[in-house]
Each structure stands twice: as structure tokens, then as C-alpha cells.
Length: 392
Image (cartoon, rainbow, N blue to C red; front, side, top):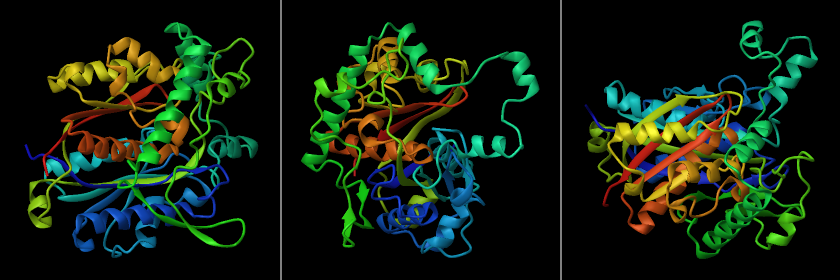
């Protein structure tokens, strides 16, 4: 069977809600990363077979197939198609899987996979609240209600349930939160994100223009004392706004090719996709799916947890990676080594290829071989991708 390779990966620096990227239309922001991976790979734009983008809230400025709109806003020719997918927080990780499956099948040779989310311009609640407010109903169907009577599917409730199930205290979560900011700060100051971030011109409050290249959500002055002072989201809970991922804006992309694509491009790949899978799990606790998904993925890949050099487990809430660590027995020193969504932000549909971009660059810098990425997703889902870094 043909292999799938990643030959280029890029992301924008994260923007805080209402922050530096808020003035960018999501289609234009996605076009920036599309153009970046085309430039980095050296591929002729007309050789790209498809663009697959993840986006969660597909309404308003992210409606009408934002992937195609991003193509039309980019330097790609009109002949390049585009499609948008939603697997909740794992949308662009699934886009990467679909791209890999396309080139592995031989149906396509060069595919761009990525994602975009402008949570400033298209709020996360819009696709649920707006239809309900205007009499168009809600997503929970009568048959779903029969199966899950009275259940409100909530990631916040899931995060609290994870903390209780895995005996994670408020202090455990706060310490993890501080470490996310510390690692992100150290990585930024060391320049470790420089190669993966593409500059985006933004207008500042004084009317001048600047290049946005630093993740806006990092608290460079974060202290454990300040984090411990943040109020709980629920009086009897353990999770706070600080130990939750940040609402943010951003876009990211990877270029995926097979052997024919490699030959046509004449470039050396960053990595080979060693394994890809997705798993459904309990939709009520919702955020636990990365644990069984990781265990199954390792079995299918013929690898042990100790053979993986780096892990990216999305920090939707601090209980998720901490519970994942306890259940899998992974080495904490290999997890989210440059911080995660608690510090860097979680631009929903972009987060999958955003994490992959960071993982690939970290493997290259550290000389690691295998990297594993997973994330919890609405509905009790989790994608797992294992990549093998190739010497360049």
C-alpha cells in the first residue's frame, strides 16, 4: 500500500478572543496557511488535488464551505477544490486523516489538510443558540433523548467527571495549568516556535501595522498563586477558567503526499504517517475517549507507549491530559513539551493540524522518531495519529 508523508506544516500564532487576529476573516486566515505550505513545499499550485479543512462552527463567516472559500482567497488556481469537515475539536486532525487516506489510496497525490476557527467572529455557541432562538430546534433528537434521557452533553460536566474519576485535585489541575504556561513561555523565548509560525500582519490599537508571530494567550508572568486564586466554574467542582483551554483564533495546515507526490515535488518529507484511527466512546463523560483510543492505536501500530518519543494530547481541560497520563503510564516529560491549549489557545477546527505542526517541529529539533497526537472531541470521540520522523 502506498505511504502518506507530510512534507510541510505551518500555523498562525494564536490570537486571543477579540485580539490580534480578530480582524481577519476566517477564509483569508486559512488562505494564509494554505499559501505558506505551498511555498514551503515548492509544489506548483496546480498540482494540488484537494484542500480539506476542519471547522467546527460552520455558520456566518465560516459557512458556505469555508475550505473552498479559503482556496478562492489564496494563490491557488480555481481548479483546486476544497471541502470542509466537522469532527468537533478533532476536525483538522480528521482532515489530515482524510488527506492521508486519499493519497494512500492512490486517488490523489498531493492534498492540503488543515483547519481554521475564528472564535472572535464566529462564537462557539452560535450554531446551537441561533437556530434554537429562532425556532429551528436543537441537535438532540427524540431518539437520542430516549437513549440519554435528561442528559445535557457538556464538556464542562465531562471535565469535572474526569477529575473525579481519576482523583485529580484542584491543586493537581492548577499545577498542570502553571506548567503549560511555563513551557509555552520557555519555548517562545527560546525561539522553538519560530519555524512553525507564519507571520500575519495585524493592525494595532494605535493604527500601526505589526507582524503577529507570538501566541497571544501565553501568560509570560503566570504564577501558581494567581492560578490558585481563580474562581471555580462550579462551587463544588475542581476546574476553573484557568485550567480550561483558551478561546482563540487561528489557522494551520499540513501538505500530505504519497510516493508519486514526493517524486513530483522532489523534496524530502518531514514525517511518514505510521498510524491513523478514530474511536467513539462514552458521550456523557465525553472527554475520556483519548485513553482507549491511544491504547487501541498502539496495539494496531505494534508499538508500546515507551517507544513514543513525544505526545501531543490537547489540553481542552487540564483533567484530560492528566487522566491520560495516569491511565496510559506515559512519561510526563514527553507530554506537550511546549505547553498546550491552556496557554496557547484552542482554535477548535484548527487545533488538530496545529498540534501536528508543533509535534513535527519538536520531533525534528529533538531528533525523536515517533510522535503520537490525540484529542478529546465533542460526542465522545478521539482521533489518534502516530507519525515517524524521517531524516532529512
